[in-house]
Image (cartoon, rainbow, N blue to C red):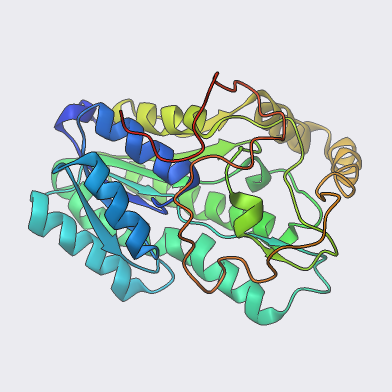
Length: 308
């Protein structure tokens, strides 16, 4: 059965990874449309500032999604404050730039704790509440849930795992005729602080290859999935192209992927080796550095939170 989802102005929405990038763009857009929000991240000071800017319709929960007990605390806070959960968005993620044979086991496991287990824990903690009244579970995958990119191999592996988990969960819920929509969002490269927050094994500062899309475009896809049940959304022309190529022309897809080896470095020394793998990032920025030719760029866009 196709779940019946509420309009945004009648929803309680949980968003993990809400302190920057896509998560923050989604929170701002959802607040403007009247949703009540539970925003989760490790970045307590930034979350508090964001919530203050959004007014009384939002609360902040400091949490590391790689720890199931902390994810349970997010759900508990939502129920205590708003009485229910209508949509849960698993957005939290971290990245590593480096060759697979150079990245440490500890860093790889940390990435999987956030990118994969964070999605698993968020999904399983949300499910009892979504089953009770119907609702939407939205997991952030990537075009590299199907395609690959060198120098970000473990990130791609984690997003493949997210797709496998999400698709299997959707199948099980469909078999139960549960009134829960399960959506995988698969963006192409997005102009966020992602490279600046990444762990970095490269000899130079990392960047995302162009073209990129604006995070607001992904936020719009997420909010559409919160109100109109759908299985998967590929956001951006390159996501559609790369995922299709991975399926029907895999050899060509890998050849194209090799071309990205030299397109993920800036001509400047590395600024931060560890990134936000093990510590909260407090930048509170939606956008990246703004010099990477992102598609759909708005005139006079603001790289910081703006709710007006």
